[in-house]
Image (cartoon, rainbow, N blue to C red; front, side):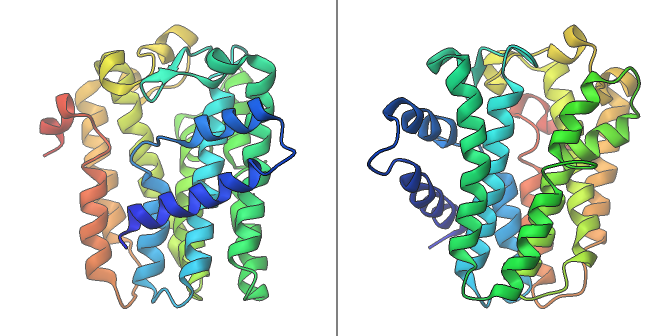
Length: 289
């Protein structure tokens, strides 16, 4: 079973728990709607790739960590799209959760996905309590304050924010969680893997900034030009298209260079090179070659 199949199976099993008898039907429907179909599943793929590079001696723990990170990502998208934040009408080529189900259910869907992420992690990694304790702490750090995705969203309410700080919290935190959690799930020391995730997270955010500036809604599956409209930090607006592309290339190369010594380092380098090519849509990919 390849990584994509492992991720989809684990996510499907996780969402099934939220759909158990007794669940409010529309909430259950909204939770599944928010998770499927997904995008490239870049974060959980990264988690599994790091676990594999470190030996992957507990696949269930790695899969649960990967799924938990993706569920948290989905939760952040549901909340980001709300009228009080981005007020987006589309996501992944379909109406956003608050458009399809109403704002109250969208808030609750995001909340439920956060809880479901930690339930999924607990079920999958329970056979090794020491690793589970480490995984809970690592993943939780990526969600809250002072440097998780909640903090990243909160920076948008501040008068001033450094672009790097904003990107590290808003996007980089879950990428860092993917790398450290993948290592921890396989029994490796997680801290040396954080820099890899931070590099990839910043690279992905730069790519997202480029998509927001240079692509049409039909190509990226969500409203374009929102950063300029809402006054958000954006690397392409601050550095220009050429500067942002150079920054993306530099960060991608640095990510490959900082991979810690591990049994599967060569395979991981190839995987990361392939994944970073997915950061940009087809209309911009030639600029990244």
